[in-house]
Image (cartoon, rainbow, N blue to C red; front, top):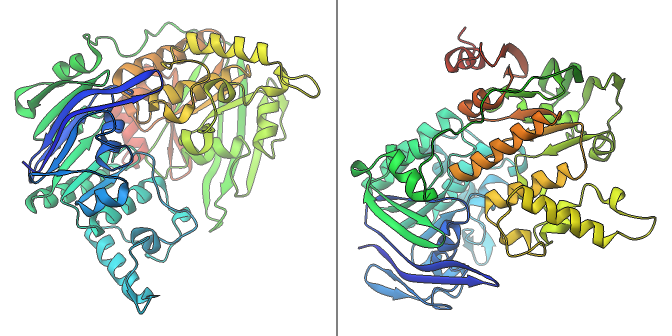
Length: 501
């Protein structure tokens, strides 16, 4: 056995995150680790990576027959473990090559050998079929390309155990195919891999075994060929999951938000990433925006919100009034909310409490001229926490300790407490398990039923088709189709997204 994690237990104040979890990994195996957000998957992997001690509360890590005690990440890496976390750990201001070999740069007499570093980086990128200059700054790459750079970084360590946490969350279909081919190569080289994903179709496609965690405990480990997606979901959530999306009962009313001829230029290349896009959103409607990665979906929302650095032209109207938006503060002040794709980077202050994050966008409404009304802040935060079913010990729990699904609920609460007239949702269920997704879907439907106008971007086509009243399709920055919920099919939307119509 390559890896054994025995009776791993880990507690935080008021919460037992892991309760005697067992997990093992064989050479040349891809072992999927699944469970709802908060089940303990990330905590277990942080124990394996040396972020948390395995012996602090109980348990042991055994690699290739030897008991290991990690006092930090370096110890874990030295033992042959490499982990690619869901939230990327790259330095945006540094180049691709510098990030890949950060802390392990080839040196001679203490001097970094830059030519050797970039040659090695280029070789690794070639293995990933990623045609990119290793001297390119990370900030100029899309999230999908950054994910592949993280994988190249892990490969550079020649790890025997590779952990991938939601590795395809931001990848295009082509990049997913590339990743799957790489994993097959690593399997042939007898690398053991732990594959964490909420995309069960991928789990069943690539894994040899599946371990299910729930509430910090090991529920079952089973050979992939001996189970089904329905059985795995039932073990994950502790119940059968039937209707995923809410029923289609909404009745949108008058147009409340309109965009005319919006064009957005990239800040670095001046290339137009959004080209003459126009659309309307009705009160009580969910407008879904579909398209492949790079189609300009996120750039469109960021530009409207005043958060995109490139030049933006076009007209924006809310309730018939033309808006002037030069910054996110302008957008917030005029009734627009934005749940961003990257919740940790743009949506939360991780070191702050749940209540402070929830009330962040609406502080002017909670404050007098000089001080915040703490009683009102706590009362509203407590109600939002209850309404959205945020799982935490209290309102004063630090947001950075919550699971991804619960963090997303806090971000949603932040905007709802500001009473927006229009709400943008960019990948609202990215990295969230099936149970938490259902809760988010229900909340989106309730918000639309209450009269809120919602614009939702999602890379998951079933999500767009299951939630949206209308679907707008983008390709290379242009609108290539618009369909009602009943007109939109996977085939027609993908045809418009790929240009094959």
